[in-house]
Length: 357
Image (tube, rainbow, N blue to C red):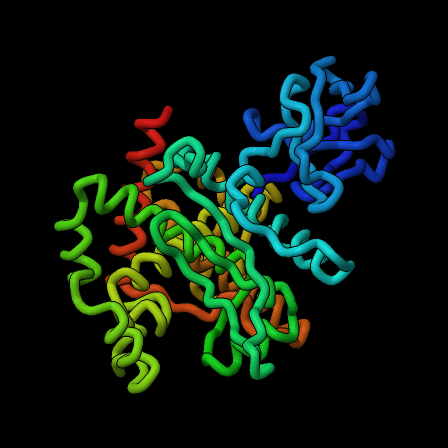
């Protein structure tokens, strides 16, 4: 994620900010230009302090705390992220409103990446068959009083996300129970969007044979594969071939986990780039952990540059986390097999970005 600056006073601002803490102006994100702009009141809307352009907030600005802006002639409409929301929870209390705001924040982080790569993301009104939609659902309660949990997943372009995942304690309980090293709202979005782009970029893009050569044959029975995974666990050598134990259960899940991991990698490296981060450890062989991200990760054509920059960053942040008594920020090891899969995702995204540009 990039750092931004207030174009009125020059103070550093962040992607989720609504107000510049230095000059107290309202600020918003202009997604078409990937920039933040400071705003001045202008009639029934807002005007950019720097350019004089008129903007209106996303229709979800108040209820979902969305800070994205739209051109003045689109008053009352939703931003490029929020317009994909097909079903939202009943906003009948502070708890559900806060849950929706947390979901919206993670969703906008996802769309930051999709827009940076120019990945196609029509909504269902634009493309009923291949469009993308989100259903954010609350758990149901049966007639016997038993809670029926919502299952997060993807089917035919519709991504379902359980709003229970916004509760930190509930999500952590699930993470521990399922023996997962990592479980976040943003991680869910990035994983499920991987399923969506498998349909768009692999199946519809004529890349199925290349996919099967790396990930395996997705035609194996999906439900049986999941049942086998939960019953028997992953294969003993899963760490040498899969980015996570869950990835080992089926080629579709392998791809989705790898796709999510690729976004983690690129976005974290962009943050390091924005901060001017340099890692040069004082050890016997520092060249193995040297890091200076002097390129734009979202525009990097050479996957080897990403792969080389990633380990030093993860080692550095893991060490900092341990110094603070926290578990490792990055509890993963990337084998050559995993790197080959990540490179496949990189090639898919890079190719689509070039076509869209």
